[in-house]
Amino acid sequence: MIIDKIDLFSYFGRERGGALAGTLTCYRHSQYAEMNRTTRHPAMLVIPGGGYSFVSEREGDPVALAFFGAGFDCFVLDYDVAPRFSYPVQVQEAAMAMMYIRKNAERLLLLPDKVAAIGFSAGGHLLGCISVLWDDPAVRELFGEECVSVRPDASVYSYAVVSSDPKIYHGGSFVNFCGTKALPDDYSIDKKVRPSCKPSFIWANTPDDCVRVENSVRLYQALTAAGVPAELHLFRDGWHGMTVCSEEVDGNRPLAPALAYTRSWLPLCKKFLATLGFVND
Figure 1 (cartoon, rainbow, N blue to C red):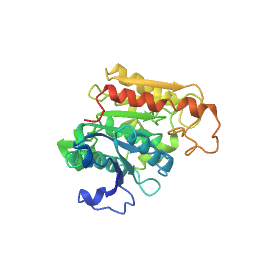
Figure 2: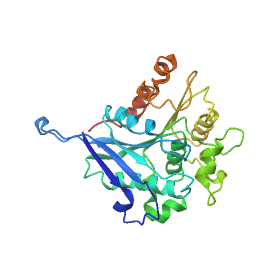
Figure 3: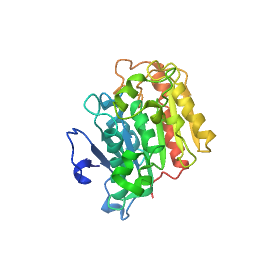
Figure 4: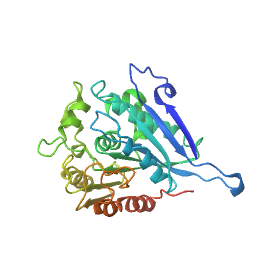
């Protein structure tokens, strides 16, 4: 395994403006000379959640390692959060992360058209910002017409914050994301879906009392209405923040049956991505 850390601001030659994060931790497969071949891998950008007030460690490295084992080279984004930063900083950092992977696909031996992204909770909302709103003014400011390269080739939404509807929204995430420079309705992902979005896998837990499951349902409905291939899995048990459903990340409830049951989202997701060609070459 090759592990690197990339400073996205430094790579793109941008002033930090006080930003503390904006980095990628990269987990890449080594090339073994004894195999006498070069293997190219699909890529997965991992975007942890945390309500835009912190970046969850449980939704970062453990997720990367789960997909690394399935043949993905994985890149975990650490992004800036409130109260110090709000829009557009998070969106630009996520956009830089995707663009870094695109621009270095040849050098890193990645499959250039097989770059997926996965987001959890508020990280799922940030995923939506680059999957649905890849030509947002904040992204155009960075990359102009190249902004379309920020859109992942497949998106995986994990108990994601989606809707700005006060009946179901996660208010804290929208307050922290928007700050004083954005309006919640302009970043309600379900309202912005268009036919040019890429295939999406969505999962959540019905009893989630933090980010209501209706967020995932509305996203699925919007995607399918737009003709975008989408798959939705709603588990009957569980709680918010289950991530890879292991004792490592949820040690307070190691014997809960819901952990073993909900864990099936991972093989289901991997199969979904494999049908789209996200396999080693």
